[in-house]
Image (cartoon, rainbow, N blue to C red; front, side, top):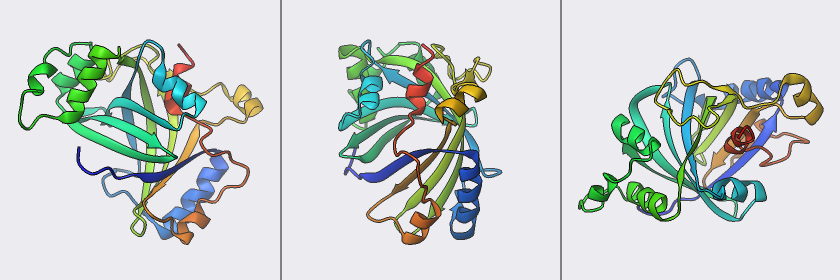
Length: 241
């Protein structure tokens, strides 16, 4: 999988007024990701976990070294699908990925992994796919739930900074038919009155950078009174189990 490249990552749950203010600041100093259309895109992910909810529990408990697998595609377009593994060590994150065809992704979602054994014999095998196969076979890793949300991304060259707003988070409950655009999805955030009581909004600001975070970006995304790492989209969606 090549050299490991860890990045700094921080997340904050923010209010809608925070989003508007930070967005205005970012539009003045950064640029929108050139790959998006109309400034945002839909992300659909299928997350994996084992029978003991290892990934969920490690996230909730703040375990220092953890990983999670997911299959992801964008704007409900199955022509580009990736298997991904995200790892966290000492607060730093890294991501590995490899491409999947729509047919391969659906087979994995259905629990059909026998065909991956042939992949392991290839000289140019997809090592991440082989790792998923071993963990599904030996550790009981299985598809758990679909997570949908809208992402609004900004980039800034120095520091290789990426700032995103994620919102409209939805869950497919136990549905794993994630290639079906009509798969029933429901909001993963509590109704408004309860949100106001708990302080939850379901709007997530995420900032990632390499060796340093430029002061100009730090000032734009500075938020007072917001708790870092207080929200996990996967964990929020699993609360509906």
